[in-house]
Amino acid sequence: MTSKNFRLIVISGRSGSGKSTVLNTLEDAGFNCIDNLPPAMLPELVKWMQQSASSNQAAVCIDARIATDSIATLPEILENISDTVKAEVLYLDAEDAILLQRFSATRRKHPLTDSHQSLAEAIQSETKLLAPIATCATLRLDTSSLSVQDLRTEIKQKLIQRSNGLALQFMSFGFKHGLPRDTDLVFDVRCLPNPYWDKSLRKFTGKDKPVQEFLQKEQTVNDMYQDIHDFMARWLPEYEKNQRSYLTVAIGCTGGQHRSVYLTERLHADFSKHYSSTQIRHRDLGQDSA
Image (tube, rainbow, N blue to C red; front, top):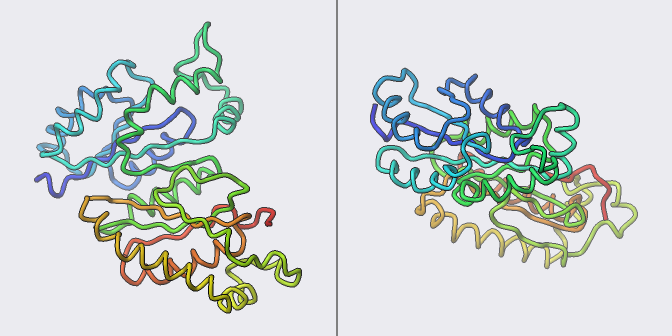
């Protein structure tokens, strides 16, 4: 089994962010999966799997449950095995309040809690501990608003079903609900005419014809679309040359209902003609708009 057809995914992230769901999803898809692997064992594991494993796909989970001093060595280890196999690093995270809520619901013990550190403090400590892994992540996912089924779908689309080449996702969002944490490029379109202030359009979204017709008539909207389109067309090939596997492009308006949704739909429709693995997500669609 050569390095070209062997695939390794390293899964990491803060406790409660969904790593077990991801590992189970990949295992169901035929990956050889190992949980809680010390980073120092990664080179030997890769060597053994390439020589003897029946599957050419492996996934390992490395997180705060292992010896803390070894986490900082992972980037160097991945660099050392880069001639043998190209590893993808998936980093999962969620808002602090969501992680607290999930631990309260499951009553599980956080790996960093002890008699001197509360759950909230442990969550903060984990952020610093995992920073070396987060820094080298090739794909980041914020699971704050994702159900277990939503997360499985995301993993299937981004890691399992995608074809070779750049996996591209366009996401709409509303600034009033916060910046997305799992995006690479952000475009702010709040300067454009807002259909929300037309009471006859307020109940519709950027996916509906009345809002689309309103925005299509505005020259500034078309200019903004063309500028974003031209920027993407110019620079996406450079991201590919730099061996990027994933790129998320976020378009934000105030509430994430009209302008950002409309432009995201247009961009997705256009770039899906040229990139076989192109997805779309409307993060805040359905929430109160403005």
